[in-house]
Amino acid sequence: MTRSGLPGSPAATRLSPARLTLALLPAALAAGVLVLLLGGSPAGAQTPDPFDNSWCLSCHASENLQTTLPDGEVLDLSVDPAVLESSVHGTFDIPCVLCHTGIQGVPHDPLTAADRRDFTLQANAVCANCHETEATQAADNQHAAARAAGNRAAAVCTDCHGAHDATRPMPHSPGVAQTCATCHSEIYDLYRESVHGEALLSGNRDVPTCTDCHGVHDLQGPTQPAFRLFSPEICARCHDDAALMEKYGISTKVFDTYVADFHGTTVMLFQRFAPDQEANKPVCIDCHGVHAIRPPDDPQSTVFQANLLRTCQRCHPSATESFPSSWLSHYSPEPGKATVVFLVQLFYKVLIPVVIGGMALYVALHWLGTRLRRRKERRA
Ligand code: HEC
Ligand code: HEC
Ligand code: HEC
Ligand code: HEC
Ligand code: HEC
Ligand code: HEC
Ligand code: HEC
Ligand code: HEC
Ligand code: HEC
Image (cartoon, rainbow, N blue to C red; front, side):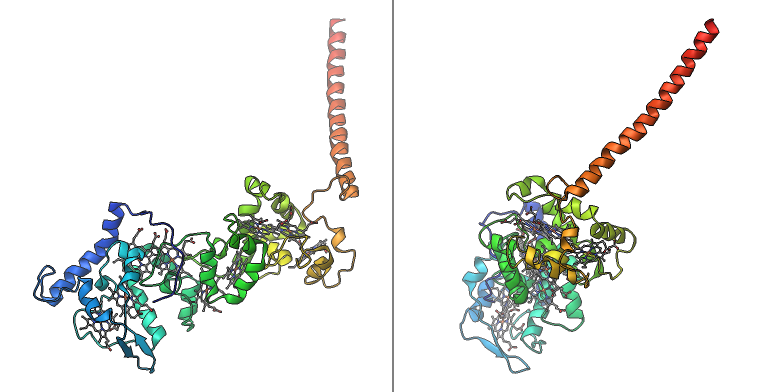
C-alpha cells in the first residue's frame, strides 16, 4: 500500500495506557487463540513465532514476491518494513498477524479474493476489531450503502487512511479534501476554486472542508430531502458566529435575515412539520451554490448583481429585471437601503405604541378622575 493517505500530525501520542490496553485487548485474545491453534509457544525459539514480524518479513521484505489473482491481475506481496514502522501502528509495534488474522503458517490458506478490489474489501474487515467506534458509524453510512447497492468503488477505511502507511489524520487540513478528491475529483475541482476551498488551500483553518459539512464515518446522504432542508444550519454554525465572521468582515445577519424572509420561514416550517418531504424550498445553497460558493462581488458568483436574476429564475421563471431588487436580500431595512420599507416599519413602530399607549393613558386617567370625583362627593 503506497497511497500517502492523510497527512499525519507530529508524533504526539494521544493514547493513554488505559486506552492502549483496551485497544489491544481483542488483539491479545486473538493471539491466545492463534497460539492454541498453532500448538506452539509464542516465546519458543524452535518453531517460527508468528508474532515476530521478522519471520513474515523474511519472505515479504523481498521486492519480487508476488502472486496472481483469479482474474489474472498480479498482487504485489512485498512489504516495506520502514513504511509500517513509521505508521501509527508501527509506533505501537502491532504484529502483522493481528491484522492478517487468517495467516497462521506457511503455506498460507489459499487466497479467496477474486480480484484486487476484492482483496482490499476483505482485508478491511479487521480494522473493526480495534476501531469499533469508527467501524460502527461507518457500517451504515453513505459509502456502505453504495457498496451494498453494488458500487465496490465506494470508500473503505484503507482508501482514506492507507493500510501499512496509516498515519494520524489531521482534521481541517487540505489533506482531507485531497483524500476525498481521489474519487470525487469533479467536486473537488469546484471546491478548490470556491471561497472556502481557496482559503483552506492557503492555510486557513476557519473554513469548512468536505467533512465539516458531510461528516466522516457517519457520512449521511446529501441527496436526501432532510439533509438539504437542514443545510442552512450547517452554514449557520460559522456564519452566525460573530467572533469568527468579524475576522473577515462578513455580516452575521445572513442567517437571521434568511429565517425572517419568506424563503427561510417556509423552510423552518418544513423542518418542523415535514422534514423528509421532497420540496423545492430555497435554502442557502440554492442561491450561493454548494461546492462552488464565491464572494458576492466575484463576477462568477451566482449572487453577483448581474447573475442574480438568472438565479431567481430557476424557481421564479417569470421573474423580470426588477424582481431581485423587490427583495431585501440579507439586509434589514434601513435609511438608504429599502428606505420606504424602513419608513413604513418605523411608522408602525411609532404609531402602534402611540395609539395603544394613548388609549391606555386615557382609560387610566378616566378611572383616576372618576375615583377622585367620587371621593370628593363622599366627603362633601
Ligand atoms: C516462507 C515465506 C513466507 C512467510 C514466512 C510468510 N509468507 Fe505470506 N506469503 C508468502 C507467499 C509465497 C504468498 C503468496 C501465497 C499465494 O499465492 O497463495 C504469501 C501471501 C501473503 C499474503 C496475501 C495473500 C493471502 O494469503 O492473504 C499476506 C497478507 C501474507 N502473505 C502475510 C503474511 C504474514 C502476516 C506472515 C507472518 C505471519 C507471512 N505472510 C509469512 C510467503 C510467506
Ligand atoms: C494495521 C493492520 C495491518 C498491519 C499491522 C499489517 N498489515 Fe498487511 N495489510 C493490511 C491491509 C488492510 C492490507 C490490504 C491493503 C490493500 O488493500 O492494498 C494489507 C496488505 C498486505 C499484503 C498484500 C500486499 C499489499 O501490500 O497490499 C501483504 C503481503 C501484507 N499485508 C503483509 C503484511 C506483513 C508482512 C505485515 C507485518 C510486517 C503486515 N502486513 C502488517 C493490514 C495490515
Ligand atoms: C490490533 C489492533 C488494531 C487493528 C487491527 C487496527 N488498528 Fe489502527 N490503531 C491501533 C492502535 C493501538 C492505535 C493507536 C491509537 C491511538 O493512538 O489513539 C491505532 C491508530 C490508528 C489510527 C490513528 C488514530 C488517531 O487517533 O489518530 C488510524 C487512522 C488507524 N489506526 C487506522 C486503522 C485502519 C485503517 C485499520 C485497518 C486496516 C486499523 N487501524 C487496524 C490498533 C489497531
Ligand atoms: C472517506 C474517508 C474515510 C473513511 C472511509 C474512513 N475514515 Fe477514518 N477518518 C477520516 C478522516 C478525514 C478523519 C479525521 C477526522 C475528521 O476529519 O473529522 C478520520 C479519523 C479516524 C480516526 C481517528 C479518530 C479520532 O478520534 O481522532 C480513526 C481511528 C479512524 N478514522 C479509523 C477508521 C476506520 C477503522 C475506518 C473504517 C471502518 C475509517 N476510519 C474509514 C476519513 C475516513
Ligand atoms: C475510494 C473512493 C472514494 C473516496 C476516497 C471517497 N469517496 Fe465518497 N463516494 C465514493 C463512491 C463510489 C460513492 C457512491 C457514489 C454514488 O452512489 O453515486 C460515494 C458517495 C459519497 C457521498 C454520497 C453521494 C450521494 O450521491 O449520495 C458523499 C457525500 C461522499 N461520498 C463524500 C465523501 C467525502 C466527504 C470523502 C472524503 C472524506 C469521500 N467521499 C471519499 C467513493 C469515494
Ligand atoms: C459548505 C458545506 C459543504 C462542503 C465544504 C462540501 N460539501 Fe458536498 N454537499 C454539501 C451539500 C449541502 C450538498 C447537497 C447538495 C444538494 O442538495 O444539491 C452536497 C452534496 C455532495 C455530494 C452529492 C451530490 C453531488 O453533487 O454529487 C457529494 C458526493 C459531495 N457533496 C462531496 C463533497 C466533497 C468530496 C467535498 C470536498 C471536496 C464536499 N462535498 C464539500 C455541502 C458541502
Ligand atoms: C466551518 C465554517 C464555515 C461553514 C460551515 C461555512 N462557511 Fe462560508 N465562510 C467561512 C469563512 C471563514 C469565510 C471567509 C473566508 C475568507 O474570506 O477567506 C466564508 C466565506 C463565505 C462566503 C463569502 C462571503 C464574502 O463576502 O466574501 C459565502 C457567500 C459563504 N461563506 C457562504 C456559505 C454557505 C452558503 C455555507 C453553507 C452551505 C457556508 N458558507 C458554510 C466559514 C464557513
Ligand atoms: C434567495 C437567495 C439567497 C438565499 C436563500 C441566501 N442568500 Fe446569502 N446572499 C444572497 C445575495 C443576493 C447576497 C449578496 C448581497 C449583497 O451584497 O447585496 C448574499 C450575500 C451573502 C453573504 C455575504 C455577506 C457579506 O457580508 O459579505 C453570505 C456570507 C451569505 N449570503 C450567506 C448565506 C447563508 C448562510 C444563507 C442561508 C442561511 C444564505 N446566504 C441564503 C442571496 C441569498
Ligand atoms: C430554490 C428555489 C428558489 C429560488 C432560487 C428563489 N426562490 Fe423566491 N421563492 C421560492 C418559493 C418556493 C417561494 C414561496 C415561498 C413560500 O411559500 O413561503 C418563494 C417566494 C418568494 C417571494 C415572495 C413572493 C412570491 O412570489 O411568492 C419573493 C419576493 C421571492 N421569492 C424572491 C426571490 C428572489 C429575489 C430570488 C433570487 C435572489 C429568489 N426568490 C430565489 C423559491 C425560490
